[in-house]
Picture (cartoon, rainbow, N blue to C red):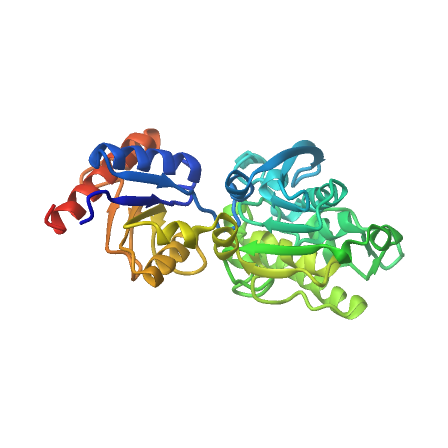
Length: 380
């Protein structure tokens, strides 16, 4: 072991309890207490979910821009995006406009939802000078296949009489025509390099689509799912027939289908791994090359961790660099390959409610146990 150990702490959010930034601070402090005199540095991670804009903005420098948009049910709210110090790149969390976490459970009703506010944030970023946009789509309450965002960007969604459809997602079943408005053409949004950051590869519709897989967590009832899926399928078909654009692609089902709406309005946009995008933007590989040990973490280590999550990307980079990687998690159901050791916040016999009530204390204690065990394994 080198005289001074360099430890990189890079967790993602512990959903529902701690942001990635706060989790990194808590883990880092526990490591500093366990390894006094060693060097500990933090780089919280995200994969396109809430916190992506904050994390990239802190790493690269940026200015917070606030604007008024519509939430998932049409109410006006104040939302924000980050314009990086280069003056040309904006990072947007879709959840800043249509947050699931900020929507009271009693109010959740995906068939009435709209992603309009996401399109409004994109327009605001372009008006602020952005030519490049990273759009995270995780943590959203909308389930309209991105149709609302596409309308905010300038597409017109018409019924059989030529009238504009209401904004609610279920009305998409009556969609008869999609066309580009003069507003869309005048905005010259086709010149914007827009990268959509996702953490899943689900298609827009079908048994693995947005409604079937993620609808329930947004408040969708079982009996509503087929109708919503059919409405969104009508939207995708009309985009294909009227605009010649295919939006039923891998990843289009992320964020309630927001990527599909962006692709409908801005066909040169790309769907990419959110974890890889964030890692590149914050220079994670370079940080890892200077580390002797990596500690990551998230709310749950399970079978889904390996599929697009930030933790999986951290683990993969650590393996490529030959750096040992440890992990802490709220619960552990499966430890992905590449993690040398992992520790759960809740140990056998603990009350899970305690970890939810005091996540920082439980996270610090789990980190301390993990580091002590790792040191013992190293013969330190």
